[in-house]
Image (tube, rainbow, N blue to C red; front, side, top):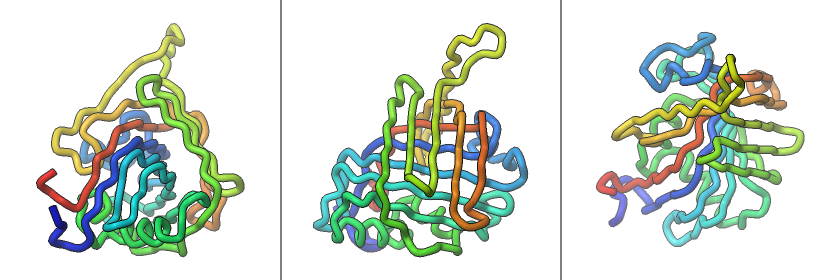
Length: 213
């Protein structure tokens, strides 16, 4: 079905998210961020996707985020990074898509609360996600990295499995929680931060501009 708000599109794949909040991330529960501000990133491996006539299968991309306070108060920064192996048509499609003008709750909402958007970066992206094992690794040399492992109990060191279910969620409906052992971003402030042992989520995404899907 055509998207009445713009170009028809869909993205299906795996997501890695890391931020400076404690495990669980208060934002997922409509609460204020752990440290008052939000510093984080998202990484996506698109298994199947398209934007109009442009196929996006196999594309890797990432976004670095920063807000001075709670996300819903806006004034955020968002730095889009597109893998260097993409074609020019794919890059143009992703840049246009992440402007948020073609429908899709996640893209619309985050575009609205991130008015500060530096020029997109094209760079090599290494991204591995094993949602079931709660393991992930994202690396963009010289720019950012995130390492995720399962949460482990403080008493025995055994893996502790926790999920967040959000029926009707605009980003995901079910996500595995993990521990971000290291999150580093090395761009100009405010997109420059370093966190350890903080929140992580691993989820399957299925986004589109068609709200009937």
